[in-house]
Amino acid sequence: MMNLSNDRSMYEPAVSVKNVSKRFGDRTAVDDVSFEVKRGEVYGLLGPNGAGKTTLLSILAGVVNPTSGTVRILGTSPLDSKTRGLVGFCPQEPVVYDELSGFENIMFYAGLHGLSGSEAVKKCRELLDKLGLLEHADRRAGKYSGGMKKRLNFAIALIGDPEVLLLDEPTTGMDPGIRRTVWDLIAELRSLGKTVILATHYMEEAEALSDRVAIMDRGRVVAEGEPDRLKRECGLRAVINLELMEPAGGALKLVEPYAYERAVYVDGNSLRVYVEDPDTVAPKLVSRLLNNGYKLLAMRISPPTLEDVFLKLTGRRLVEE
Ligand SMILES: Nc1ncnc2c1ncn2[C@@H]1O[C@H](COP(=O)(O)OP(=O)(O)OP(=O)(O)O)[C@@H](O)[C@H]1O
Ligand SMILES: [Mg+2]
Image 1 (cartoon, helix red, strand yellow):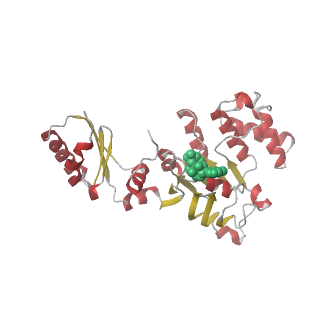
Image 2 (cartoon, rainbow, N blue to C red):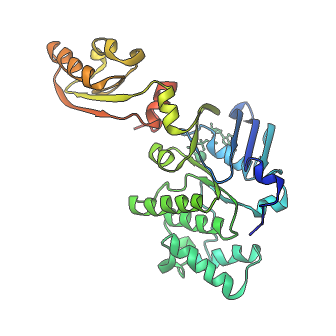
């Protein structure tokens, strides 16, 4: 492992992105994005389809060049060969050699990182085990499911003991048990002082793992910071979810006066009302609806999530249902 303790670069951010834009023809995939990630931080890029997360990670991984702006990783360019060795990239679409077994795939990359012999075998087996792939190690990777290929890619990203990890949708296509394993692994990497940038459209994933998040939409960062702070800054204290017997659009006007800054969202038969004081407001909302002939199927009061922050800022949901 590199000894950074006497190094001035210790005090620089692990990753810095300054005014980065990427255009594909007349489409702007990333639009003037800036942020810094400290060493040892897990930084979430949260946004819906097409927000620009993959483009941004590909720029950080040095596989796509930005149209403008600058990116530094560990004080140098992502194209610097020394830096490349310290960055582990797990792309959105898994890339594995289908003809090779899982074990042979990771051994190949171990070799590229200068590992050989029994040390390489031990480390590869350890990583496959961590990702729940040891029992499938000798199967051809071409026979793996999408989620398994993804985990194999994660193991490959870790084989060089990187300082910075770029993870693009690391748990998409995985069942909940395996997702937990991957989350635990990301938390373990954080405790080892690794820097992680995690792109996801799962609000729970960003919230569970990230020290800070950048919420992205249509190429731009629309909010950035610690999840709890973002929720507070949006003035979100609590969310009252009301499920009606009929389409909820007509009830909007009745409910609006009770919401914080008139923030109410209609989704089919349900209403999502943002309030400051749910204990006082909830009974009033219910009686107002009932008095106006609406039938209520369910009501739930919950703390706000990053999904609510996204909704408040953009008027849209993170994941279209
Ligand atoms: N190579 C490309 N050529 C043209 N357009 C592209 C290319 N790559 C991405 N785009 C466009 O750039 C925008 C951002 O795409 P990107 O894949 O970065 O988003 P994302 O946040 O990763 O989305 P997803 O959640 O679907 O993975 C989209 O509108 C996409 O169609
Ligand atoms: Mg993507």
